[in-house]
Length: 228
Image 1 (cartoon, one colour):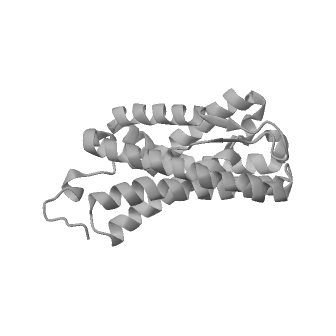
Image 2 (spheres, one colour):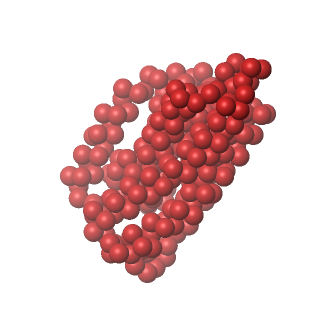
């Protein structure tokens, strides 16, 4: 999750940056409206991202030396502020993390890193949220388990596939080492991601529902609701 610009061609990096800009610009009004209406949730989201992304496991040597892993928290942020705001906050956090951990010289790779690490979990979370609203009953268990827990696990796994695929494309590492050594780590991280996201989702719903813009008391806590 810590791409270096030396791993990719300049053309690929700038194409990724341009594509990201074309994605983010139309989403800016919705993102700023959401953050403007939910100041406390925005502050909490920034704190969660800063804390989770600072917990990094760095691979010092071997065939995948130079890689690092960290939690994402983006499925939870999507539930807190919506997908547009989650993409914007995740992209800004990736820009800051790249400058802080890799150095300003590697900022051109930020767009590609966002496509691999930020977009997949936000997309998974948004699709599962839409699917649950469309096809499942408005039940609190469904919201916490599927949108809070399961979405985080699937999003991390998809991000891991995208990251591993991008590194395989770049030929920066041995392909066998990537698929057999680097990718399985995401399976373990996915459980931690899912547990923390599901736990915080449950805590926020119970104690601070104002932090969850996608949660509604009227929808999920009506008396006539049953488990199924």
